[in-house]
Length: 81
Image (cartoon, rainbow, N blue to C red):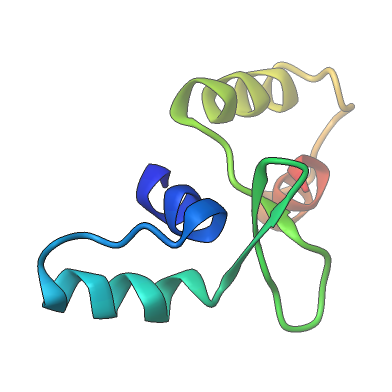
């Protein structure tokens, strides 16, 4: 995640040409908005990339019921989005 952010901010690439090419191709799927990394989706909203601690917090909050009772996996995913 940090390498993609660094590439989108400053164009910084790894020294290894194979990793650099892979990063360029992979970074095309992401956008940087107000210094926050988002993954582009084809038919939906931008998906915010969370660090592991933030993702754990979001999942815990939704699972404990702060967002109400969830019906299943798809409904839970939509509430997190």
